[in-house]
Length: 614
Image (cartoon, rainbow, N blue to C red; front, side, top):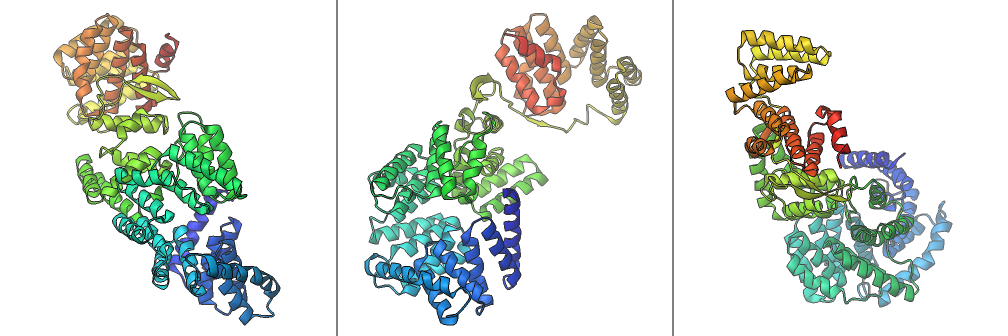
């Protein structure tokens, strides 16, 4: 099975066990899945439930021993070992379990004597803390938070359980509560690295970068002995989007741990975060080296292979490296609020959608911060969400993202278009955007392209003749197409739509002089008709009067919405005008916009001709 299939299987099993928590088979399926994808936390979680459902089943208790050991939970392991040997002293797995006892017991006794938190603590309370930490770290907040609260009561002077609680609050989107608890921990333990790192990350997510910066600056001076602390500091800088801080901390950690004889002690996630920082600074070889090392350390961490895959894509098609998955920045409840706002927009129109999105972001200001972060350094799903919101709301950093090099060409083009609609970019002039890694002067679409043809222009009677004409044209019968239009003009004299189609037919038959004369007549009669104005502008451009042609087109560029056929006409006119004026880059910019908006309608000959111009 590929990774996508494993993900789908995990989602299906999770949905089943959540709906049917008392069905043993569901948890057994989760154990099989956890073994297959090498995620012991899934096996351990399933065993927690199975021990409740089938407390007398020997295999469940043995699996609890093994997975607790794999997850580095010595006190939980010790407790499960003692329970197993009490109940099944001659059990199937008794020799293996007994072999683990001495080492595990010795480890726990040493911690009870020397570890700051564990000293003089009840081993059962330490096991409770370990389990709460495992759940919170794996993202199972609903299960982990109650255990963390219990652990905090059992270990009232220890900062670690409270750090877990603050992390749980942050995952739930309760960032103010998370900040308050982190500050409370630091009031009693001012040097606690986990609490300091947590507080910096929470402040960044609240948009209080100025408050987070002094904390991060102080973390630059730390040189802990514990590899986990180094990883936590790297994580704090990653949350802040501080690539230099990530790289400097990771480098110091590598040297310090190597000198202490712990060369491979940094976690896979820490190596991944450093790889992202290098990638975002343009050092892809070092990023790939670190991702390879991270894969060896944490082969089941999806972030690693997803980033490696993205980095191999062609320039212009890369999302750009990301530290965390989007659900680390936004909660499910926040997304539901946005979905409701978008659904209202679908029913009531763009203005309603804009109002509803603004309501959500005003009610949840930290969501606006998260979306700006996702725009800058989010994964593909997160950036897609951010751009969807940016269509209705001017997210912080939208203009900067559009002009930068992070993200795909399509993402930055979309961001530039939205920035133009929000008045953040002057769309009347070319702007410099990166395309396939190179800066180019491009014009932006300052309007929405739609498919709603104006009813006044295309009445049912006109539509009959236009449909017949277009069908003949598609069959290659240009003369027949023109004949249908002539018949229509006899029934509806001087209709602008039919006259414009006649002009096109004459030009296609090579009757250029007649087509040009009709162009002038239609424009004189219907000067506000977009197609007549565009045709006249193209005629003037061919005759060398590109300044006059630009004056004709200028009002059309101020419109907010264009039908796709109207946009095609404007684009064709702009290309002719810019070519006539010798502005080839601008002409190519309009060609690129046309290709993005309606690629099937772009004449291949036009693409070829612009490609051949120096």
